[in-house]
Image (cartoon, rainbow, N blue to C red; front, side):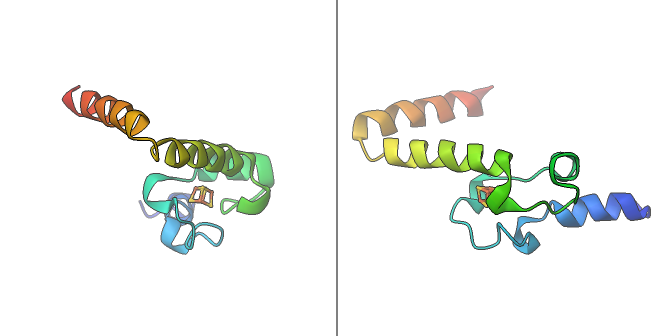
Length: 87
Ligand code: SF4
């Protein structure tokens, strides 16, 4: 825990201080990976506006939140979430 690398990973994983994430509406449901950021963009923090992983997550969140506007779809997603809790 005292290693600089470990602290760097822990800090850069915190969405509250992640420059591209702290204002994102999807922050409560999301997470970042400093290893992926470092490998793909050369920094533990990454650059969310140009980050492919973020784009995929945004697309998934957009789709899910748009989908649950329909009561039938919301019911299905809630059943999936409840099933996940039971496991
Ligand atoms: S969707 Fe992108 S900007 Fe939003 S919290 Fe996730 S990684 Fe950050």
